[in-house]
Amino acid sequence: MKSNNPPGQINYIIDDNHVVWMEASWLDDKESIEKFATLLYEIHSGELLEDTLRFLKEECSKQGSQKVYQKILVTMDKMFLPDDALEEVAENSEKDTPVVSPTEVALNYLSMF
Image (cartoon, rainbow, N blue to C red):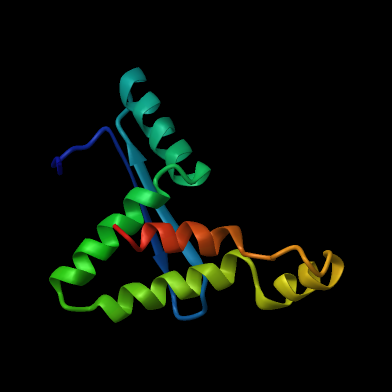
C-alpha cells in the first residue's frame, strides 16, 4: 500500500564504493513517530527479512530473473557467515558434529516460498 504522504519512510542506497546512504522522513505527530519507530525496529531486528526475501523472489520470478534471486541469497549467506569463519568452527568442533550455517538453513527454507 503506497501513500503520497506516508507516516514514515526509510530509503537505503548503496554507491559504487559500497557505502550505504540512508534517507528517512516521518510526519511530526505522535502516531507517525511511533509508526516510524516500528518500521525502524522491524528493519533492523530482522523481522522483515523473510517478507523482503519473499517479495524479491516474487519480483525476480515475474521478471524471469530467478538467477538474480539465487545470487542475492548466495551473497547474503556469505555475508552472514564468511567461509573462513565456517572453517574455523569446523576445526574447533567435534568431528562427528555437523557444521551448518544457520543462515544457510534459513535461506534454504525461504527459497521454498
